[in-house]
Length: 546
Image 1 (tube, rainbow, N blue to C red):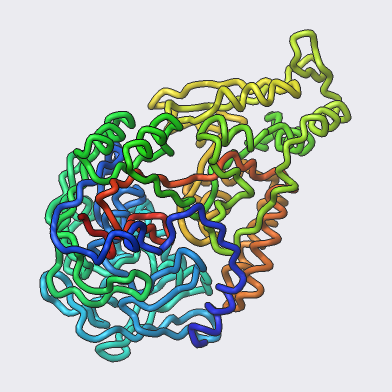
Image 2: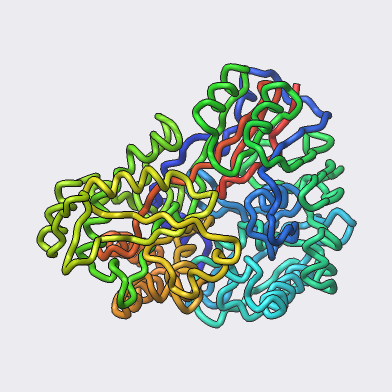
């Protein structure tokens, strides 16, 4: 199948409602022509506390993937505005009618930063390295979720490589646009996964070179001379304007903001959105706040529906959904202009379908459902049935945003949301042990197939959560819809399956979307050409400083 037969149709089906940023370089139009030279200083949220890593295939940490995007290119790229997959290291590709073979024609003249050729053999060897890493890490490497069904790759000729899958996977083409399947010198796979996490042996073909990675301290990129194979998406497809980029890691949001306002750094990149107060400080200083929703699964609550848990009752789940005031939650926790979540996926996700009506705040409706289900209001304002209080156990961590506000909202309809702060040890066991009624998680990827790694027990990162999130019949329904979406080369079937899935998740009370996940960045007025990738990472191609 020709690439455009599938993808042009798919792109036409997308309803991507981004929150700004996009691909258009910010500020370049009124600042004159780009200037070369200089060092860009970026302050990130602290490095991964449990597994600091800069190896493309292994890492999930958004900040690391943002860095990787600028020193390691991929076979394809993804347009943030349309979701369309476009050429990059591969100039064209074909998908076999059975969806089991993806054949890529590579661009000529591309080299890794150590001078080695990026040819079909290098790409095929990378594929073998990915598969070996999945085995070596027992599936823990984040890239494992991108190579479902991949059995290997073969060299057709020096500039043509074919990937082989054991079953159709309509998400695979999008996977080739991601940082996790970035093409690197396959010599790195002679090292252990732990060694590669330190940056040892990790060499890409990107616009920058990884100078060094000092976990939890700093990462430095330097300009790659002679680069000339950027994708069609950035304006500058040649050498970088910047000479160097220095990323450091700062825990305190106020310090990051202060450094930007004072001019000590050029970009402040928080993990959670700025507080309204910090955002005002940034804009008053003359800097900008760029933002874009992170694609993939929105920050969503999932119920424990196992026997003996109150949310095993579908009527209680329906009432819970109606009792959440998502608009007030967004404006109170994140600020007046923060977007309201509209479904199980953030709005920048391909095939996203808004579920606004189904997620409308309806406390009266919630109370009617609970009354009909036999839950009566007691003297303390909470509801009771057969002498038992309607209590939902919601374990939290120090990073949980707005849990007290959610607790207050549910109390209005008589639900007692019991907040329980987990210890470090409990955080690793409570899901497996089923010690919760409600929990929250998300997954960042510009493809709706990301949700299967939460809800499909066959591939989920937490099989315990997946098995408890719905009844056995509900899980079968979810798996069937994922199968229809993924095991096809027909974009129309994929669209319909994902539309049906999004309807079902809300109707059956499988997901309770809480808030849209938005990546914000404070950008100095001296920085021009800022742009987000499709995954809401930082793209440096067009960035320059005056």
